[in-house]
Image (cartoon, rainbow, N blue to C red; front, side, top):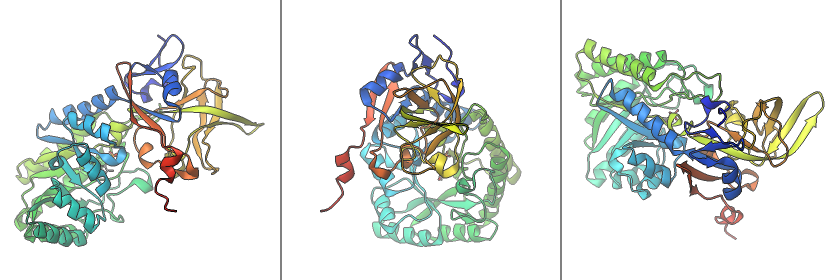
Length: 438
Ligand SMILES: *Cc1c(COP(=O)(O)O)cnc(C)c1O
């Protein structure tokens, strides 16, 4: 077996076989492309498990009372929900749709936290009717609405208050959430968080369990977490005189992953030390009991496990400018490069032992000039029919997929031990017309 090129950004099970093909979960990607077609998303079960266990063990070794929640918005479907629930994970949802999916998958809904800055009355009523475990309340409007809905249902709904600690995690402007100028959370700085705690404690049909914040994503630095944890724990301590008993505490998600070989995300142990260290120091200095700690990785679980696989078609050399290698997917299955300027690596899946001697631009097939998956990719020589693998594609790519240009969304397979299981079939032309009313 040859060494895996750019191994750092590929799933843990990745190998190169004696035909020079990339192999993930014991499955040759060339065979997967032939069987399921491309574009194809391949999820490695070993990586999903390793990431979930890695975060769980890192935090629990420092604070046994830690609950791991998977943020569904990174990517969810019924098979993945069952798999992750089987690992003992709870879930974050941000819509009635995600909640309905978990319910259909048979996930116990007492393990679910409902987030979002504008949950609709219908979504909240449905969540209460289904007895969702926890709602992270994000506005005064929602506080009053949920209190009324819970009252009508004759239950007391456990809630968290989402606060905004005004901490800048130094990530992309469009994925920053915990600063003062944000649509998310009650700012501590303005006194609105204090008022929210007061109202939640006074609400007859709400049971305030604790505080939540989420700074944004991906966060490569540890200081913003430590800083925000200390600030929010200090706030929790002040709120004790209002009657707050902090049973649960969540510093959200946002844990970074390596998209390129140059990326150096902190390991789970480093995040755990920063967060648990700050939490324990704050509890000790304020004389507070240590709460249940919730951590909410989405990207860090799904991201490294997913590899996008495309077939090369047209190759266009613009002399003296660049070579465009066009593939059969693009912004419809991965909008991140066009939306955030996200950077990925690429490897020729059918020639993984060949040296990367070419510099090309990997373009999609959509009618937008911005539809480029990788600028200046260093890859082995390709021709029409070659297969391009783009690793670290599991999070926020299929989850944000669209039917733009009426290209159907890709098929998704889960691989493990040489077995590939189709967990989402390719969207057909008929699927795309199914909602049209004539
Ligand atoms: C998006 C989100 C997460 C997950 O973020 P990742 O970067 O995928 O880890 C966690 N918690 C909340 C409230 C979120 O909105």
